[in-house]
Amino acid sequence: MSLDTREGQFLQTFAKLADTLVAGYDVVDLLQMLVDSCRDLLGATAAGILLADEGGELEVVASTSESSRLVEMMQLGAEAGPCIESYFTGQPVIVTDIATSPPEWDRFRASAIEQGFGAVSALPLRLRETTIGTLNLFQNAPGPMDDDDLTAARAFADVATIGILHERSLRESNVVKEQLQNALNSRILIEQAKGVIAHKNTVSVDDAFTLLRSYARSNQRGIAEVAADIVNRRLSI
Image (tube, rainbow, N blue to C red; front, side, top):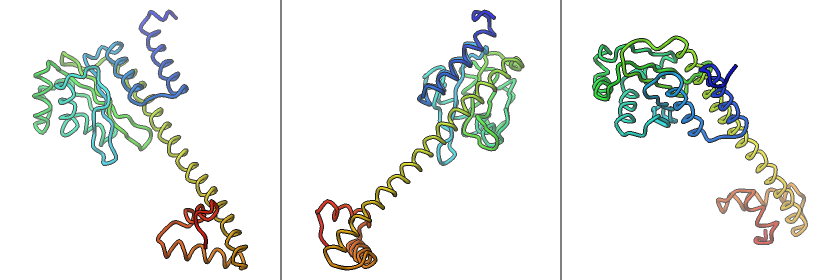
């Protein structure tokens, strides 16, 4: 298959997404590649991605234009519009004629029409029961998006979602590993400090630990912190 064909360009895009995920990536770079590909390959006039923060609020993280009007329109859609509906339902929201969208979307509708958009497809960034945001594709003319283009857009969104969640799980895993290693390192210091205290005071290691813990509590310090000071001869108990 020639890479100059549309199908070949789709394959190139998936390959780029896969390479990015394997090689290590910045989330914003990944999502920018995604929206640019949707504009260039799927006939969308504009595209943007919103991700949910810790409080569940959707924020624009990538778009095919940094025009304040486009960003503002997507934010309006995140307050009352297809973006927020797709996010909360976890389902695609296809609006074939923005002019006839629900009354509660009036601010989004007015902004979209003012910018010349006639239709929008909001696709959830979802993996199983977890939805992290939406991919939003805008068209100038009213009407449904081509079925094949919509399928490709959903596939792009799925790959990006898997990548983001995978990166988050790795980061959280690394945090857990770091916390575990810190705990192990602290335990080594405590064992060493117990030995120092036991030797100096001619007491058992149990009594040495009691002294260590009592000092830490009395001075509102962590046991590992006190142990480090003892081992490094900054403190004597």
